[in-house]
Length: 374
Image (cartoon, rainbow, N blue to C red; front, side):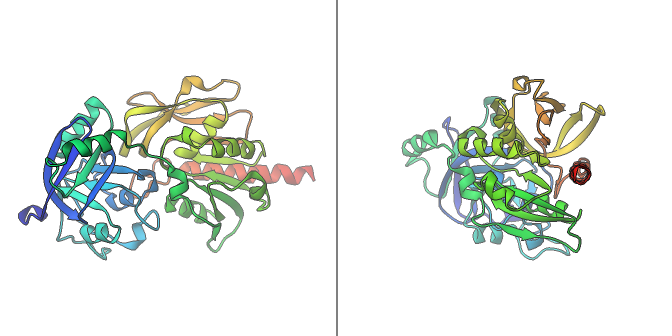
């Protein structure tokens, strides 16, 4: 284990002035971001490659990270967008039949500054009690530059999140069966969303986030997927306006995470920033229709305010069992349903994968209705 062989000193400085001393792994340097924590015991590679973590310093609450190595197949995107990485202990002698490398080499390949051997339990308690705050990871002498760094940390804001992580051109993926054509809007999508659709017989065209409604129509899709992604959903008014136009087309829509928030904003709802967000693979969600509770994978710092949803527009379909925040909406006036959690859950629970089947069923019903009208 890495704790037996400490490397160069590294520091984590929080916006409130708290300093954690540890050691560096990954690359050396200084990086500022929003300090968040995720509670997953596994799926650290999926966390590292989830674009939703753009601009954030990610803390793993599970104390040992890297014990099964890394491999290309588990990446959720082509690169990592996290700002920095914080762990208690990392394993430099991983063992798994699928592994191709270790986590430190992965961090170096992605130019990520990491810090280990800090009290992640104490850090998590601070965030839970005070709320998410900015911080800086540095391999420089933090005490010599503390005032200067604090000024930069306190003024830091995550901006241009979607435009940074989205693709530049449309890309199409399919398996043997191509029964449905799905347009997947890339707001920072996870690959397993695409994979879940492909294995259900969909030809998936991944579209850049700013693809217009007219450009979308030219593809003649059977369904539209609005993906997850990073940042404050209210920052992207251009996308919200476009999503409103897309929703008026009558094509079946399924939204996940940021896609859920953007569609809600386009339909007159409000969003709020949570105290410390929901990040991990063990978030309990109640389906208000079946009254069943599902274990879900989540990664978000904002939530739709359920009370802001006009009852004529839609109904809250799922709530978080811990804090009762909105976790899903079924719309009445548009052909859409959305969820805040991740039903694709690569590296997490598979309880809610049935929602992809429901999306397929909605597309099939719409196809049959259109055929009957001809």
